[in-house]
Amino acid sequence: MADIATTLGAHLSTLKVIASHLVHLAAEPVLRVAVDGVDGVGKTTFADLLAHELEAAGRGVIRSSVDGFHHPRSVRYRSGRSPEGFYRDSYDYEALRRCLLDPLSEGGSLRYRTAVLDHATDHAVVTPQREAAVGSVLVFDGLFLHRPELRDYWDFSIFLDAPFEITTPRGASRGPGFGDPDPLAPSNQRYVEGNRLYFREASPKAHATLVIDHSDCSEPRIVAWKGRRP
Image (cartoon, rainbow, N blue to C red):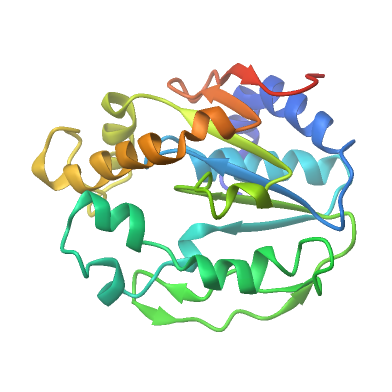
């Protein structure tokens, strides 16, 4: 993983607290951990680093993302570029449950796939079917993970929080094709307002086990933790 030592050093304290808690949680048969938040908040990097910490602690890790479970473009944009279409039509939750979440749930087969579609090419992908070891941890990142049809799958869930004034330019800084840095730009309204619709309908911070202020990626700050905190 590129520059993991540098990035991990900045996150080490928070990540070690979370990982040390997770390694003591029962996996029945797999511990399913979600990392949620808006575009540009830093979900993928945070999830990668958390997976690294869990592996260092001796737990087997399955890494996956909702990005591997997009609907085809014809479904994603059937309502045009509307915020409601972004929230309701982006992801194939039936495929996500069938291929990944149900197999890793109690009574599941443990045989899973981590993706079904390459959204960049809009082509189906055939990822190999793997068999999870009992006691593994699924670290799964993506948008909208506290929707009602998903939230009961998570044994532990994290919501990374930061304002759009920070996340939108942060996402755009990844390079050409990642959008306008201005959250008020017309091209961003599908995403900003789609996430606000998610907030109104699903209240992700209220349902997350852990809420982290991720406004400064170098200093993630735990602001809420449900249940017993280590």
